[in-house]
Length: 639
Image (cartoon, rainbow, N blue to C red; front, side, top):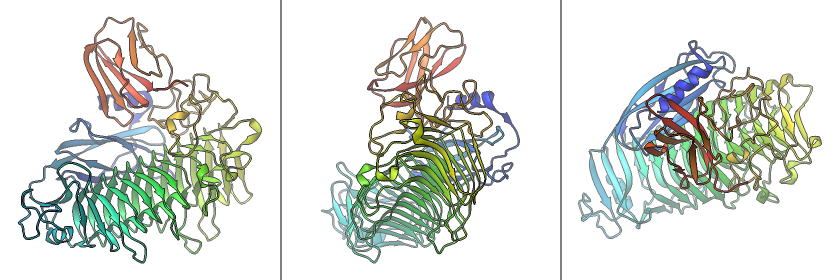
C-alpha cells in the first residue's frame, strides 16, 4: 500500500530520469535493535548550487511491513537515520525528486537478526560472586558488571532497582553486538554516578543502550553528564532513555561515527542537552528536551559542532530556561544536515562557532518544523530572540515551516568575520506574527537580509492582525541578487482552521495552521518552485497553482472520481461515513508517518476513528476494481 502513494506521486508530477540515487548505509545487517544511517549525498545529477538541498528525498524504511508496529517509517532528507527494533528482512526505499521534477527510486535490503549471545543479569539483591547468567543468580553491582562486559553479550538490569556505575568506562570493545538493557517489570532501572559520566563509551562499537533511567551526580570540569560516546566509537544507539539532573552535557559525542539517540526524554538538566562535535552520521530522533534548569552557564538544547551528516527529526524542545538556542549548528566545515519536523520555542541557528572562527557551513535543509516564541522567557538572562531562524551559511533550503511570534521569521546575514551567507532558498513557509514578547516588535516580517547574496523568497505567507504590521523583506545595500516572488501578507483571521493557543512549543502544534476553504492563500503561489510536498507530505499543486505557505488546502468533502458517493465529515471527531454506496471496501487508515493505524475488510459501515490522535491521515478504500485515497483530519474539538 505504501508503494501505491509513490506511484500516485510519480504519475501526477514527474518523469524518471536525470537524477541517479546512490544510497550508502552505515550497515546492512546486525542484531536488533539495529541503528542504520542512510546517506544519499553522493547521488548524481544534482550537482547545481542548491540542487542537493532542493531535492526531495522521501524514505520508506519498511515497504513490506515487516514490523507492523513500526513508528516513523517514512521520513525526508539527503541523510536520515532509523532504528529497526524487530528481527526480519526490511526493504528500504528512497524516492528522490530533483528540482526539475525528475525522479529516481532505489531500494536497499536491511537484515535484522535476533540476539544469540550470552545474557547476564544484575539486581540489587544479587551477588558479584554469582555467575550472573540467570535471573536467579544475578550480579549485584553495575560497576562489576560493566567490567565483565565483552562482545556478543547482553547485560540486563532489573527494573525498579538503582545502580551506581562508578563511572566505569566501556573501553575498546570492538567485537559486538553488545546490549545494555532491562529485565523484569516496573519502572526503568536507575543508573547513577558521582563521576563525570554515568555511561562512558570509548573506542567501542556495535552497542545498544535501551530503556534505562540515567541520573548524573558528579561535578566534573564540564559538569556531570549521562552518556558520552567518544574516541572513534561507532554504531552506537541509545533508545528510550530517560535522562535528568545532568549539570553538564547530558549526551556528549566527539570524534565518533554513527551514533543515534531515539525516543528518549531529557529533562531538568543544565548547560546543554546534546553536544555532538567532530562526528558524522549522527541521528537525534523522536526525543523530548524539556526544562533546562538554572546553571552558571546555560547554553543550548542541541549543539552540533563540526563533523558532517547529521539528522535531527521529530524532536520537541521547550522550557529551555536561560538558553541561547534550541538547536545550533556550529560549523567547522559542516555539511549535509537535515532538520525535519521538530517543534521548538527558541532560536534555530546555523552559525559559526564564535566571532573568531571562520566556519563554512553548507547544505542544510530546514523542513516541516514548528518554531514558536515562548513568553515565559521574558526577563531571563537569555530572553526571547527577535529571529526565529538565524542563517550565517551557504546552500540552505528553508521550506514548509511554521514560525510564530518573531520580529524576523528568518535572518540571513554576515557575522563580520569573513563568513558569507548566500544561496539561501526560502520557499512555502507559514509565518504568524503576534506580539508575544518585546522582541516580537510592533510588526513582523518574513526575512531580514544583511550582507548576503542569492537569497530567494517565494510562496511564503505572513499572517498579521492588520496589513500595516506585516512585511515581506528588509534588506541592506550590501546584499545582492535577492529575489522576492508570490509571497503574501494576510490579515484574514480565518485563513487557518484553528483559534491559535499560546505559541510556546508545549502549547502549540503545526496542525493548528492548516488552511480553511476560504483561505486567501489557496492557489496563489507559483508552480515553478522545487517543493513537491507540503508540511504533511501532501503532494503540491492540487488546484490551479500551488498554495502559498506550508500547507496545501485539504477539501472538506471528498467525492470519488465517479461522484457516486461522498466521505464525510472532514474534519472528523468520531465516525467517518461513506454515503450512497452499497459497495464493500477493504479499508485502511495510515498516519502521516506511514504507519497503518486501522484496517477493516469488506465493509462500508461508519468507521470509528474516535481512538485516533488528532492529526492528518490517509483513508484508503480498495475493492476489486480500484484503489482510492482520501485525506482526512481527525479533530476532537470543533473550532
